[in-house]
Length: 373
Ligand code: V47
Ligand code: SF4
Image (cartoon, rainbow, N blue to C red; front, side, top):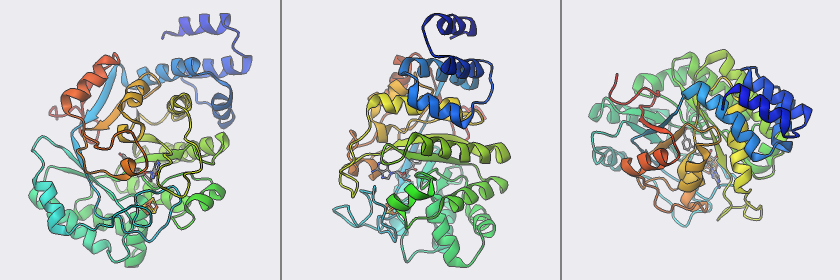
């Protein structure tokens, strides 16, 4: 959408002055305020948001839509915490598991050489410590030195680092020396302290989550950020969450991507809360794209939203569909997501992206074109 066309639309479609003012800011590449963000979530209709999000997406990523060849390992679902939205931990899941180091290594060895990224995340096991996880990284790097290991959410890191008596800086520095390449975005949930206490009161605080990511960035460890939306939070809480992330990113530039995560309501203590509509999902992607002007990438994690919505999200600001994944992630299938067997082949990924009118680009974990380095 070019700016002239946008002006014509704004002048002739009866959009309110306030929304037109926000749209003009976006078109001029100006930052929108928290009040603007809340206004967009509360009042703007879907097509209007899609149009604005597209402006930002094209500015950041042209016509490219990224994917990666990756796989997940979830070492355990035994957890010291008891988050109310969680369908995955041993408190709610029908089974309880903990993989041994040998089993994890076997999973790594079973992947073909074209896979470039391993994502490790799981529950917060009471008996495992930072040295266990550090040794695990070292073993993985010994057998697959070029595999990018994105591992341990800030909540897992908080537990293992606190238990060791190290500070955040030293704990992360130790893990980096063992082979930690980047940190996934999990555990952010919603930063507002009142809602956080209600849905995951035992978990690391918002301040700790943010401090771990900021410290990681200072150490040269990039990370992702997520937000769990569509439960009991308000639009103000969502924008507060985006604002806290935008401020860290202004200071560090260390976030690779933002991933909005839709709350799924099967098999957990919050099952009484209905899931939000698809329209609201697309609005959330679009407003995230518009608000986070200092994040280059917006990711739709297809096992969470389903393949069809992930594909549609490419028209609402998203430029990254995550990866091929394989069937080892259970977080979303247990919570009621459409895909009970999350695996997409490279050719399916390419078709999903091409059908949506984007240019598929296979990336590495740092968004360099795979094989081009
Ligand atoms: O923090 C748990 C979410 C997250 C539910 O960094 C739920 O590339 C919805 O962070 N409904 C973990 N969401 C997964 C995660 C992630 C996933 C993919 C890629 C990356 C990345 C990170 O899953 C948790 C929580 O917010 N979650 N239960 C549920 N019922
Ligand atoms: Fe444990 Fe994570 Fe589930 Fe919370 S969301 S109970 S920290 S596995």
